[in-house]
Length: 293
Image (cartoon, rainbow, N blue to C red; front, side, top):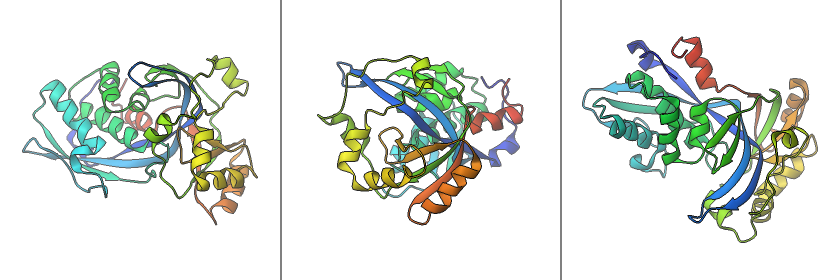
């Protein structure tokens, strides 16, 4: 994991919190505590929130800019920083500045990624030297998607999303559309119509083209704008849902093909032209700065 404490000048840097796509999502069962058992494939995309950590002398954790409708104590970056302090006894403080680019309620993992970047970078800035495994454990307490962002590589995931194995996927281009709606993940997972008994598959099955999303039927039924986005995007390539949505995406073999689709769709939709990457942009930055081995 991170071997060195980052020098003090790095406090002024912006750190990426990248988006993810679920390239497939199967629900294979449900635990007695209500959590769903999943199989999914995560890949990062080069679309990021950006986080700057400002040192403070009073030991407090605070936000420089509040997200409308989210109390400071509920913000995942604040919760992540406070969890680190509680776990390690660290007496240092931080003021967290987040520049949001990832849409909320889009299924791109924005809040989870912000939390993971906070755990990973403050672990280094504060010189805590916690292992990746420990940071993933802390991340899981914040949300099921946080561990993959700490893990830092495209992953085959099982369990509730915390059992991760590295998978390298072709780094292709995507067009992502954010429909004008906010999908409530809890609402989707509580739906009586949600498939909960999909058969488990192998990585080879995914590579061969099995990439259904078991949440798609429920989301498509409840959200007209998701249905419309799927129809428009499918005119260019197979349109798929990431996570519980609301974002939908299509994969392209070339930047030219993706760009052509994007140019058409962005006239009507909030759309993004992005490249898929197997290594998290956060870990690319850390490695380039010689912060991890």
